[in-house]
Length: 180
Image (spheres, rainbow, N blue to C red):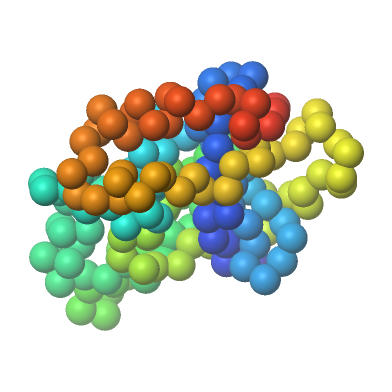
């Protein structure tokens, strides 16, 4: 098996050229990064968890956490294992009663669940890249550090529509340009 490197969510932004969300994973204690293009619902879920916004009812990734815990399992870690035809693959490693289960999953869902359970995320060493040098713009990651919503939006009263409006109000040029 290829060596795995622990990563954390470094940034979440919008790729202005494709109008797609990008989560930038950063090597823990290092400079290498792994950009993964994700869907809007997963971006919103990651953003909600990072900003500790709680909803009245569980969202899909909250439900997944509830199922894992309710079944007496622990999410040991997430492994982002490979990329094929521009599609990234990940797996959840769940432990229950001494037995480890490998569950195929999308990286975006895996990251959202790992954030909720406090579980580490690892990426295959070959997937990590060094960030571009200063002045390089062609493949520069989005500049957006995970956006901090205004204070009023940090409450559980924030609706999905309000979050969409907030995210839609962020201009692509606020994030820089990132080409896949």
